[in-house]
Each structure stands twice: as structure tokens, then as C-alpha cells.
Length: 293
Image: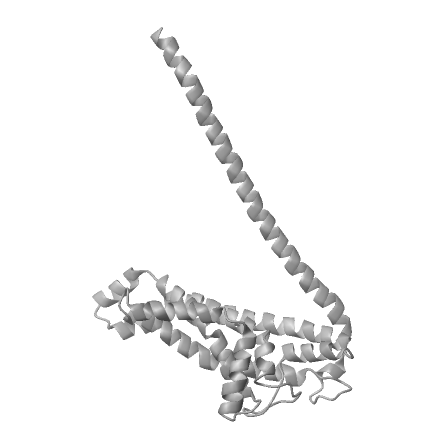
């Protein structure tokens, strides 16, 4: 009687355990399917956008679009290409040193649990969520009007630097935090100081993550229109530092807004896609080389 009673108790328990395992297995399969489905949808949307741009833009590419000077007949994009490269370089030249220096201070020098550090991080996260049109209005009121820089490359570059500064700073800080403390302890144990440890040990290890933030910043700079319309202007020329100029994104916006050169706007979108791809590949190549070193 004792054995029969034990069997009667064990069988429902076994069935319950098997049911739990089956439920967990089905739940895991469902979650896996949802992840794969979301990835497939994202890839399909991206593929559709790229294909749509290429199909509509490649047939519209013609030699007149690559003339050195812009006219209302050829609507050349060469000045916009040069302006885009210059604007990206100037904005990164300002934002990257400031963002990286701030990230080094917050992660390597500031004491843990410091209230000032927490305030800086909260402020940075808040600034990263502000719409670009707000940065554009600030740049117009402060750099263009108050400082009398006018609609110029300098006004646009400084505004973009302020806009991408939170992104560069947060990604650099996360990359520095990902470096194991054993790297620092080993360097200190060998007699190296903090500054030497940061620049010879920590920064090279965190460089791939830092360059990932730089790549994201490049993408935001190249695709920005609202902030630059209010600060850099829309002049179709190869500008100087204190002259107005338009990037490829603004060039495409102006052409599509006029409604007279839609074919050329599609061609500009293709060139813009290629420029972004080349910049990302160059940044990835630099990151890979630094990682090997």
C-alpha cells in the first residue's frame, strides 16, 4: 500500500514537471520567433528603402550633376559634397576631443558616487533627446545673431558639435567602463601613473566602442537639415569658414521642396547614401587597425 501510494503521488508530480518544461520550451520558441521576426522586418524595411533609392536615383545620375560650380540648370551637387565633408570634419574636430575628455574624467578621475557626475550624466541624457530644430534655433540666436558669425560653416559646425556631444560622450564613457579593471591594476602594478595608464592601456582597449559613437555622430551630421538651415544657410557654393553653404541633405531638401528637380533629388539621395557608406567604412577600417595594434 505504501508503494502504490507513492506511485500515485509521483505520477501527477511528474506530469506537472513535464508540463512546465513543455510550457518553458514553447515560450522560448515563441520568444525566439519574435526576435527573428523583428530582425527580418527591420532588414526588409532597410532593404526596401535602399533599393527604392537606388532604383529611382541611379538612372538620374548624369555628368552635369558633378560640375564644379552650381547653376540653376545643372544643379550640381559637388559643392554640397565638399561642404558635407568639411562640415563633418569641423563638427567632429570640436565634439570628439570634448566628449572624450569628459568621458575620461567621469570614468577615470571622478570619485564613484559623486553627485556632480550623476548630474552630468542626467543632463547628457536629457540633451540627447532634444529635437534638432531646438539646437538650430539656439545656434541661430547665439552663434548667428549674438556672436555675429552669420550663416556660416562655423555656426553650423559648432551647433552640430553641441548636438552630437552627448552621443559621443555617453558612448565613450560606456566603452571606457567596459574595459576590465584588471588592465588598470596591472598597469598600476608595473609602476605606470594614471595618465599613462589611461592613454596607453585603457583608451586603446576602448577605441572600437569610442569609434562606434563617432560613426553614429557622423551619420547624424550627414543627415541633419533642420539645425543647419538656421545656422549654415542654403547657399550652393564651396564655402569658407565664415561663409554659407549647404550639405547634401540640405541640397536634396531644397531640390525636393522646389518640386522642379525631383530626378536630381533622387540622384542626390544615391550620392548621400554612398558618402555615408564610405565614411562608415573608413571609420570601421580605422577601428580595426587600432584594435590590431
